[in-house]
Length: 355
Image (tube, rainbow, N blue to C red):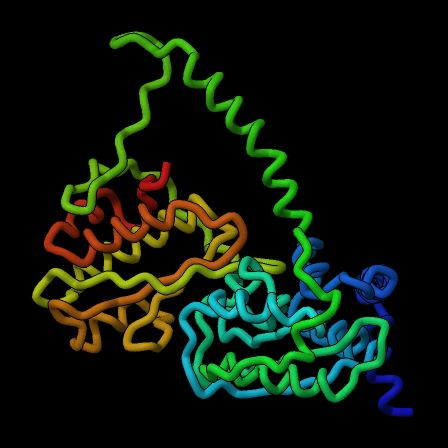
């Protein structure tokens, strides 16, 4: 009785009750859709619902794949680092005899789900880290799972661990082929519209020198050049953590050009990241050094270990990730003797580096 009351506490408030109802409706919708050639990873990717994260996705995986469809599972705390899991998609696409879903507990982004046959979905995992939990689900949709499904789950997990084993013939024949995602189709439909809009913009009359039209945008900053004097705006709000199904870029290395990554370089990086977060509040910048995530950029200076030639890594997470190349150029300059370009202006203000 005590356990029942604990589980139902969420229903005691209006917000909790409404949240539970929404979750039930979404789950029912997925129940009605899943089956045949509809992979759960694909459905979640297309749905793109920011409420279906973390524990809620875990519940759906258990309810639909394990309890309803009887999928076989194999879990693994990864022993190897895989920097680019998308390379596995080509192999998994050959497995037409079984349906596959993979969940990965990302240390920063939480629980992520993908159809491993789709490289675009696997790209959302970013690099796979050691000791993080990965679970493979294998089944046959409406048909009861068999021993081949168990073998498929175990083999898929081993491939994520770096194995090069080949799939048996029984896994290669069937109807579980990769289908084209709705999101991809929508983007293709929008491409011609964007192209036409760009052409119209190119034909528009340009403002003459000394006129009252809008000034032309500055040319991209080259890595070897200093940035222009930054425009300073009011203090930036705290960056919002990404919500919903998100993607994370690979880690990009920035090599320290100064003899030591000193306090000036640290302040430059803090201002660059603050400017990026102000422009893109829905994106999150993660910084790493020697494989560990850095929560406070100041610690890079305090350690005194980040010297000339050392590599500091960063990644960006969120939806519609933009300006990563520009961010990398600015961080490279901030790690060099040209860092002072980012220190102009009053303290506690944000430089307008990203437009």
